[in-house]
Each structure stands twice: as C-alpha cells, then as structure tokens.
Image (cartoon, one colour):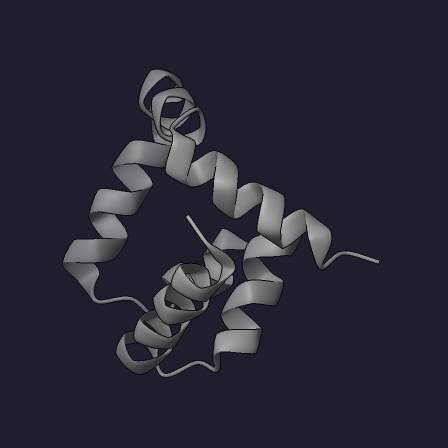
Length: 79
C-alpha cells in the first residue's frame, strides 16, 4: 500500500466519519481506536469491536500485507 493510497483511505474515512484525515491518522498512530469508532455508524462500530475483541482475527488483520504497510507509514510519521 503506497502512501498515496493511505492518504486516499484517510480522505475517504474523513468524509464518512466527519473527522479530518489528520485526526484519523493521529488517532491511528496513537492507537486511539475509540475516538475513531465513536464517529462510526453503529453497524461499522459493532463489526470493528467484534474483530478487535477476537485476538485471532485481530492478529490475522494486523499481519496482512496491507496492515503492515499502513503500520510502517504511520510509524514514519511519529516523532
């Protein structure tokens, strides 16, 4: 996943959640999922919470190439 694609992802999330892309990026980099989920629609929030509450599903997602690329980009932006 290129940085351009990540920026597009944050832009789309920004529209859906009513948060700036920078707010979403900062919350994701800080691991503050609750602030992002608080703006999500109830169905999306429920699905995300189900995944996050299942360690095996969470591990599978975090080990995906897309998640690893996103994590790498987010970590580059940390001081």
